[in-house]
Image 1 (cartoon, rainbow, N blue to C red):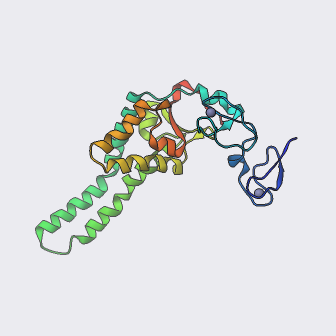
Image 2 (spheres, rainbow, N blue to C red):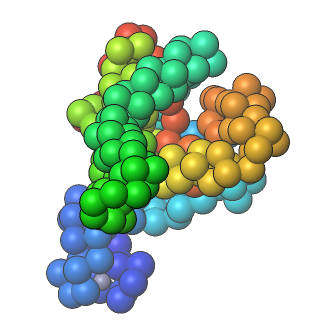
Image 3 (spheres, rainbow, N blue to C red):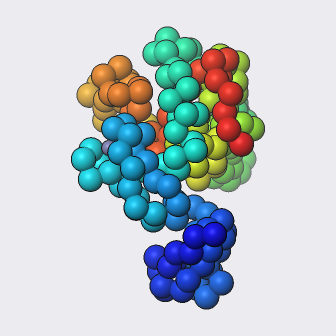
Length: 221
Ligand SMILES: [Zn+2]
Ligand SMILES: [Zn+2]
């Protein structure tokens, strides 16, 4: 069995170890024994992380076949999922909307107690739809409710697993941020989906994710 040195503390470990016994470094995630570039197929020495030709993050040789089996989600399906998640978010916003409306009624009424507590309550209730929008792609098998309905999933490419809550938050923060910039910002990520390789928008690149058609693939556990 091959032995390697921990990239962090140089302690020797044998192939297949999950953690460094000296410093606890997560070798299962950070160390790839047979790294290969998913784009140009070049092989690299054990422990390499990025391709020196095109900068792609390297993946394990044995996950290469699965990587190439994925079918990129169509733009239409992604838009439909986005629309459905918009409906979910609207529904989740109803409690906040009710509290806000009740506050407005008190404000106009000018009688009785202050509307401020209702406005504060509305702000707190708005955390529900806000949180959903951030973490939605980490639900189930990398599927927001909209994506589940349409048959899409978000895959984390380096480890070939469904998107986590953290990865979902990262990729959706980009949409939220661009959403603050009228017109140009709203178009930025949809245009990226259309023109970029594998339909990976900026949020997908940051989180190392890709949206795939679930019906066409067998993802590797
Ligand atoms: Zn170590
Ligand atoms: Zn490459």
